[in-house]
Image 1: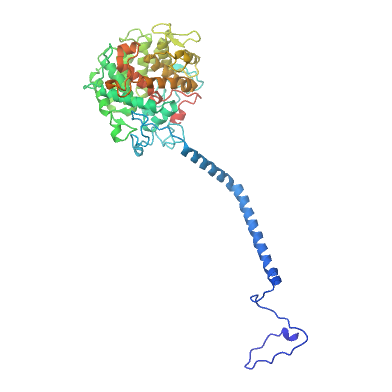
Image 2: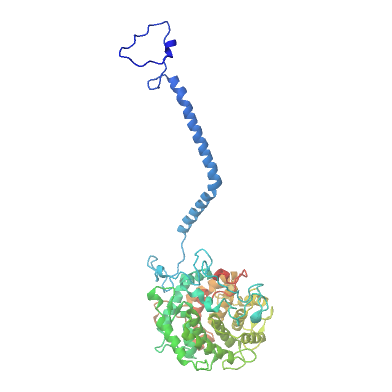
Length: 543
C-alpha cells in the first residue's frame, strides 16, 4: 500500500515496469466524476445541492411576500381601487352642455360649438382643480374673500352687522367677495358656467332654451341698438336694459364671450355693444337716462354695471357710478323708491333699485351704507306675516302679496339676512304655497306669473337645499322650457308668450321672455349668497 501514496517522480524516457499482481484490488482515486455511473454515488453528491437551492428560494420568496405585505400592500390596494374607479368612470355617461346649441337630441357625435383647447383654464385667479369644488383657487395667488352677509350663525345682521366676519353691502368686499375681482359674476365664465349649471340643477334642455332665447332677442333688436316692449309700455330704456341682461348672464359682453371659440365668442358682440352704446348716448350728466322713471333707470343701471363688472372696461366706470349716484339721490327719506325720484317708496320699484345697487357693488363701485340702512327701514315698514314678521311683504303697507313677498325676501337676502334667519325660513314656507306648476299636485293648474317666479326662484335658489334642488327647481325649469315657443313657429320661436300678469300686459313678449331667460340662467348668473353648511363661498371661490 506504500506505493499508493508516493508522488510520481519526473517521467523518464523508459516507463517503469508494471506492478505485480497481489491478492487485493488497488484503491483508485478519481480526480473527476466524468465517467462515474454509479447511481448511488450521483444521488449522494447531487441531491444536497438541490435541497439547498430549494431552501434558499423558499426563504427568499417568503421574505419577498412579507416585505410586499408590509410596504407594498397599500399601494397595490390603492392601484386596484384606482383602476376600479377608472373603469367605472369610463362607463358613466357625462352630462355635457353645448352652451350655444339651440337644438337637443341631435347626433351626439357632432362636434360641440367650442374648441375644447381654447376653453379658459380658470374663471378666478389660480389653477383649476377638476376634482375640487367649482372655482377653487388651487395654486393661484392667495385671495382674501370675506364671507357674504348671513354667514356665521346663519341669521345675519343686515347691512350694519356688528357680528365679526359679516360683511355689509355698503362696504368694499362686504357682499360676495372683493368686487374688483368680479367674483360675483365668475359663474358666467367658460370654466365654470357648465359646472354651475350642472350643480345648480340645469340640464341640456334648459341650456338649449337659453340659446334659442338669445337668438330670438338678437333678431328683434332695433337698428339703433335698442329694444322696445311690445306691451302697453314701450319703455325703450328699460326694454334695452332687460334685453341686455340675458346676454350678460350667459357670459356675452361687448368684449366677447370667454367660453367659446373665436367665432362664437364674438357672436353677440355687435348686439351687446349697440345696446350699451344706446344707453350711454341717453345718459345725462346727472346719471339719469332721460326718463326720470326709476323703474327704467334701475334696469338700465343693472345692465351697465354687469357689463362693467364682467369686463372692467374703463369707459363704463364713470357712467355706472353716476347711475348709482342717481339712485342714491332719488331715495325717499323713509328709505324706499317709486317711479319718480324722491317719491315715497313701493316694494316693487324698491326691489329693482336694490338689485341695481347690488350689481354696482359686485362691479366694484361705491354704494353708500346709509342708503342701504334706509332701505332696510322701508322694508320693515311693509313687512308682516302671521308666523313671523318679515316673512311677507306688501306693496306700500303690511298687507302681503305673493309677488311683493318674493321681492321683499330677495332684498333682505341681498342686504344681509342669513339663511337661518327665522323670517327667511318662514318666508320660504310662504313661497312654497305658490310653487311652480308640477312641484305640487295642488299646483296642477298654476298659471305663469313671471314677475313672481323670477323673484321667488332667486330667493329659493339662495336658500338652497332640498327646497331648491328637489321641490322648486325641477318643476320651474321644466315648466319654462315647455312654455317656450318651439322652433318652426315663425318669428316668435325661442320667445315666451306674454303671461297674464302686469308684466305680460305692460312689458309684453319681450319682458316675459327676458325674465324667463334670467330665471333659466339662475344657476350661473350670480354665485349663491351663502351655502347650507354656513361655509359661505369658500367652496366656490377658495379662501
